[in-house]
Length: 175
Image (spheres, rainbow, N blue to C red):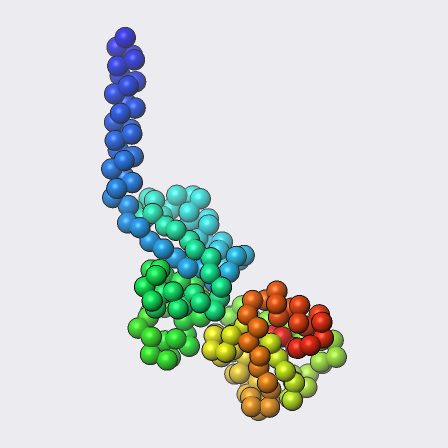
């Protein structure tokens, strides 16, 4: 009987402490720009309980890369992981708290017919959006390689799968 009472008391204390813990956790919403590698740091931290240990109840919300910064600026989420540089340069009141790589993770994928970046002159190129980080970097890449930016038509097609599909169909040359 005493053992049952001790066990019941322990369960009540444990349940009460979990209830208090749940009530004291600060709710945080993070927008992640796409499923895949950009989610890894958040998923690992969540699964290993790092957020909870620090007093946070974190929801990671997958958005399209083109709207991640917009939902941060609007206040719909607390943090985001992409596309903030053009927004900051445009006057958005945001700060970059962490950079997890020393180089941008951007790729220029072209048709096998393109062997030199100067061959993009006069071509149409699929980009994710008209003002994101990848577009900013692509414009810089063109300039540094002697290609006038205004000679390359950039068509915003959105997510990588759509741009890759356009490349395979032979309609555009996506970065």
